[in-house]
Image 1: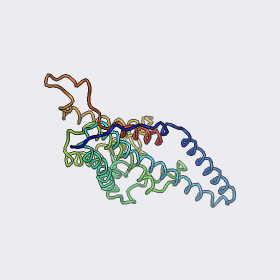
Image 2: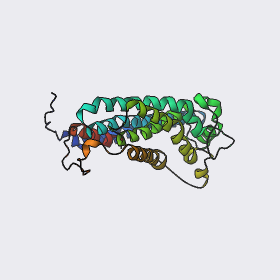
Image 3: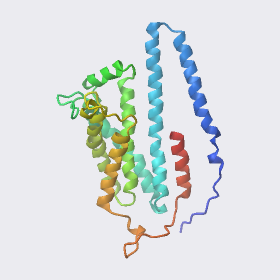
Image 4: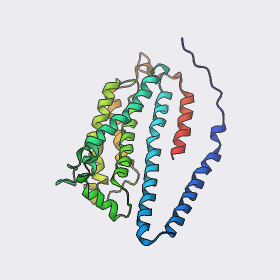
Length: 270
């Protein structure tokens, strides 16, 4: 029978010294970029700006991608030890499913051209680059100079995050196959249509002046509402309640170490 020993938690992870490295690295990169721009002609400065913006967008996308690991540790830390492998497998596979769904349907519905552009995109399925003329024009006009493929990756990691949010709400109450199918339809239909309204160049909410700078509505509200519906349909975890329906006052915690790692990980993301 497996037993879990109490871990002596070190306080070294709380030391903020490592956090000073990030601003330092950012400052060095900016100084190098400024020096590079200063040594180039005006014709080359646009290409330099494009490269710098692309690197920054990719870096931000990678950081959001690794939030998936943080959510996995959070979920495993709040569930029973015997389900940890299933939970971590689910959090690993959900991004793979999200990538497939977003590549086939999601990005086209979210940013594709369409005769009914305020509602949904209808071109660019399977990431056909000819179906995103309006989105490409917006990237150029706003002087973001971001290639379409980099923008696709940036939007993809947020779509995967929305699906991962649901994972914690239905932990230990849903089969792996059912959750993967749910994640596919969430990223292929529900998430991109909402994202089109807010972030697409011709979205109807965007035309009304609605601004969602960092995804509080498109990502977190969409994922949160899907999680709420899933939790309501599945009901509470049975072992968390007594026979009379009352909550267990002292729930045995199997994952304190995982939760501490999670907090450290998510703090580094923010």
